[in-house]
Image 1 (cartoon, each protein chain N blue to C red):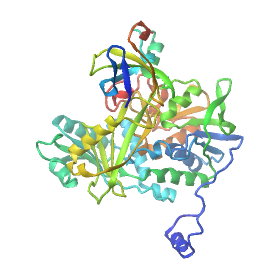
Image 2 (image 1 turned 60 degrees about the vertical axis):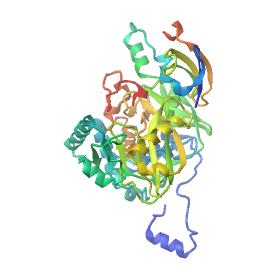
Image 3 (image 1 turned 90 degrees about the horizontal axis):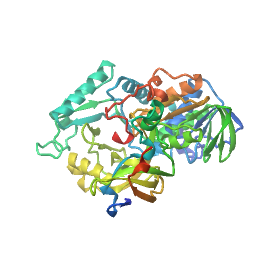
Image 4 (image 1 turned 180 degrees about the horizontal axis):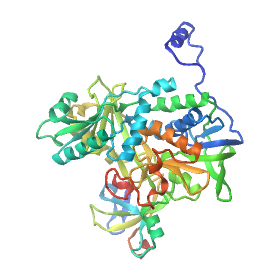
Length: 418
Length: 87
């Protein structure tokens, strides 16, 4: 693999850009791999990359039923942050945030990580108490969090409706300045290129249709491109976790729902941070291209449809316009939706399953993108050693039967209550 | 947007209804611990049809059961909640 560099670009410019090579190979599947990862999204590709880079393994394949990064990696709002209240969550995401800060260098691929600040707005005294509590919890573990006054919020985001008779009056906020956004596709492509250069086979258009068992243990998978043997198999399919796990006879603490997002036409810079809210469910940021990206609630019923209900979009936009009235005349140019794997406590699942040799990474709800590097790192550790990394040990699949759920919002064991 | 035929009120817009949970998550009060755990914390979650309990919240307020395909949203059956919704 040739390194990307400014010098290379210059050389290309002088020679008609004829030197570009595909960023990864398109190999035929081998008959056996030491580790097979099902799912070629950001998480699966990051897992393969760290398996090769950190653990020195080489006989690895990533199986993707469509094209890499075509699922939820390409269907999110690209927000990166680690501002969680509970210790296992903020420590895990903070580990990821540190990886994000060096990711473009690490991969020699510009993931366009932009730490512009991730800000939660508070709309009442109760909100401000919750935000202060969360900020304090983060700072106890050395994670940056600043409680903002009303005036400080207004200074950061001059276009917010700060009037006292606003639909959602703003009392203050909590900002994590090291949070921000990144380019979603580049994350998948960067990890794919990195993994491929270390010998990982990325096999696209290869859907897993069943597991090959030897007694209880999984020893391979049946795919649309034939049977592939494996030492260990890692499921990493986000919204389709339940579907794939069912092929191994597992019933997961996951319900799949649709999450929609949308983007407006491009305009000059007007939103400086990522704006979220403690009371509402609406998040607004501006892409590097200028489009205003909106996200909101998931459609609160189970679905694998990858298309959502317009009433949910209307709700997200109504909240966004109430916060930033200046957005009202922008035209929406694109909407999309992904299948999110809503877990029963809102926390991901990374670890062993009751089936020998079979591991799972899922339950990301609607917050998987920011976790991509940390998820890959810890899942790679789990797959390489057969044991969880300390950071993902709390995310074990059996935590529900042990009563050790990690419920950030405190909303109880219902996947549609987050 | 889906249209759901309430067994009591006839065809109505989906926005009148609120999703509750799946039928397989209904658990008897005296169920043994492992069954209760399965019903409370896991779902079949098929990429196909499943039986779901919805409530006609902004209509007659009755709980109903619908059989809906999770990819096409096609609703093949709706019925009033009765003994069949219980385990």
